[in-house]
Image (cartoon, rainbow, N blue to C red; front, side, top):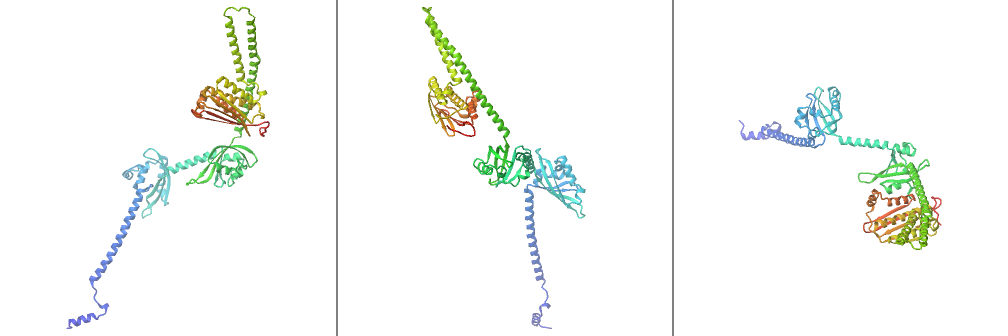
Length: 525
């Protein structure tokens, strides 16, 4: 029998391969391995839960509708909140009924059912469709629906999973765009679009008709090559646009590539990016040749009408002066002679005779005043300045106004019939208005020639009025004095401005271009 000590020594000297295996150590090692596997599984499971949570959060918060439609039972088996909002049905109703599909308009509903029929899905991985939907508030919405096909192990379509998006706004934008394109193409006016350098990018049919040029010849050309002349001191129309845009109803004469010069009514504005920086221009142009010709004919007819009116007034004034006034004056003289020849007139005849003579003299004075108002005597012989001076003296004498009349630069100026008549009527109308309405004490009248215009300035210290609104009310009442003054000034290519405020008097400023002989050439005496 071997002693225990020796047995322990022999065991200690045995090689490792021959030692006995410790079952507790193996068990511990296995435990640690399982612990590591569990920890890894737990981490993976937590990551999966987090991903699932993010996925469902995305499903619940996305604006797109997401669904699963079971083809076997033909029911929605999953819908996210956005889908329910779009189709206006609680989730349980969508699952248990096909009411969601029933909200699709009938014509589009048949197309949708055909798309998801077994025959259509058999050889497809997915598809899509646009359809109209009746929303719960009764409005019509456009939907874009796309899906993928889920198949079973046998490869047969089992369900579709899809995303549906409300595209009503996009459809509206497309509709507006199509409408604008229709307007762009059908507009009779020329519409030209350029980039920031003035290169034409688009042109409509109206532009092709206006410029007698195919639209394809516009694209890529500089707008200044199509309208070739300088404009208001600018080298080309593009410089003019960039200096004045946005502008509406700007009139100019344009020289076209074929050499024609036509009047255009132009409106232009910038095309801007999101930061409001110009990225191009859009230009609207209309040929106003016909309108200009009509305006010129009306202008000519109006001037002829006024000239005829003045000539007729002159004739009437002359007849009144040469006949009626002279006859009344002759009656006055004969009455005086008759009364002087009576030795002893009956009692009371003397007073009646003097009253009759006074009435007759008043009638003569009124006829003379009427003659002067109808047509100023002496315009041809005395000249414009002297006649206007006489008008101011008579108004001051009859009304009590203090009229300060002065001229400058008019002494050697040769003025024609139309100009003389217009200036006289302007001052006459202004003084009449001051007497009737202004309640003024003092009036300043200045007639000045300042190359190249004749300037008439009339100021009073009366009560004034409230500008344009007063003129509109006067026109509605048939008081057309101021408007007739504007018309007279306009017929002579002049300008008239009126500055008036309550309790601040009124100032009328008239500028009339001075032309003599050829209207295209200004001459000065």
